[in-house]
Length: 253
Image 1 (cartoon, helix red, strand yellow):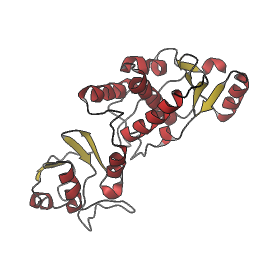
Image 2: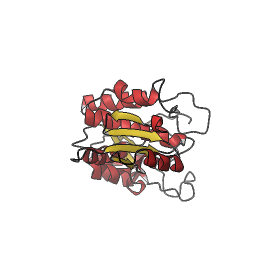
Image 3: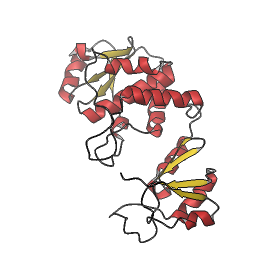
Image 4: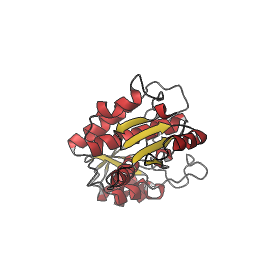
């Protein structure tokens, strides 16, 4: 079992994917060697829409990396072993978070950060991320794809771990506030509004009418909304009356 433990930082940080009883066996193997077995539920925080399972969002990346950096920076010489269950969703998202940590906090490149989880000697095979449908995916998103995107966002100044506004991010992420995400200075993605009493509204779904988005969109400097779903989901004049241009670019899911 000890051979299943893979090191990211020699004598300081490692990871393992195993069952609970296997972890207990590992604790025995590492007894007396100043090792600490930890995990978190952050790699389990992704909320799927369909058959999708990740990756987790930037708010989770920030929370994980900030907390993990504090733990790694502690003045002790413990070997920290991060434990991951054997389900493919946990493996994919935990690998992404650990790799993101090595990039953002240890200066690794995307290729260097992906290698421990994707090389021929990796302890498990990662299932690629997929689109949010129940259909057979037409495109697979690899761990390296995700890390390249994060690397590019950092290089453009779109994401900075030390300056990330976590409070604002989670405020906008909340469905009661519109479920918005600002991906870059000029682009905001949001859940499609629904007019009051819309037949598209599903049971227990939280959806805002277009006029309820206006204050937040103004706050973010949005001047144009592009609707990708059906043109009868809401009245676009609610945005236009607020001085926000509106265009339709409908396509089937």
